[in-house]
Amino acid sequence: MNYRRLGRSGLKVSELSFGSWVTFGTQFGVSEAVGLMKTAYDHGINFFDNAEGYANGDSEEIMGKALKKLGWPRDSFIVSSKVFFGSKKNPLPTQKGLSRKHVQEACDQALERLRLDHLDLYFCHRPDPDTPIEETVRAMNTLVGQGKILYWGTSEWSAEQITEAFRISERLGLVGPTMEQPQYNLLCRERFEVEYAPVFSEFGIGSTTWSPLATGILTGKYNDGIPKDSRLELPGYEWLRERVLSEDGRAKIAKTRKLAKIAEKIGVSLPCMAIAWCLKNPNVSTVILGASKKSQLKENIKALDAVPLLDEKIMQEIDINLVSCIVNKLK
Image 1: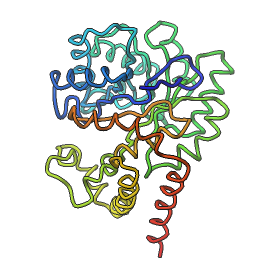
Image 2 (image 1 turned 120 degrees about the vertical axis):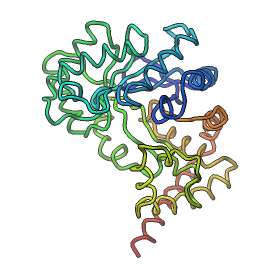
Image 3 (image 1 turned 90 degrees about the vertical axis):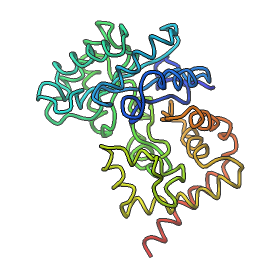
């Protein structure tokens, strides 16, 4: 495993990390979580991602119990939480958003569920149009001062909103954001590569990217329909199924078929190539993996071996194939 600095901070995160979205609390419980987290840790993964909104807080509860069973030294791993959606199925107005009240109380609740005395990373899970960014920056700065969080960041904020957070922190002498958590994969590139380019260059912000396999599309498993054991069949994820079956989803599956041929040519699985492709971008600090089986997780970790295979020629071939799919669609 290789490790990269999280932006301009001194924190070293493993190039691959492990996230609990969809799986913890939805597909399985503590014993399965222990097995997967141990597999990740034994392969050098040191960052475990979570959020208050995952399974209405149950994901953090399960991860907390798993961490207690695993008994790792606290200084050997990194844990995150995110604030915005709330941990209740139908949150009250004060139980969601990025107000000072909810940011503070959600942090305390996450620490209780995770059975930790501090969070390494704390994300604003989405921008909050009802709360001034200055209020949120001040709240995060307070948590840093209290030692409850070490670094804070954003997730799916616009470059303009991230810039405003930096300007406010600079003007007021407060701790600014260290990282952004955006979606980034072969089929979702524009925001990361174009919109965020000035943010990366000016502020040196780190990134903990999610969905490297485009919610499963880049595994190739949807090329011939949706398998019965797919997460798209889970109750509550009908929206994800509809997205995959939409016209845009079908276009992405067409691109996936072309990409699979390139992966076959260089002798790796399509998921490994897709994850390795993300790691080729120097602005990526870590790629968050999601897996429900140890075998799946081990296979995805093999992406580290695929990175050297993606030379300039292969990277250009990937881009050409993606562009050709777009051109064919427009004809």
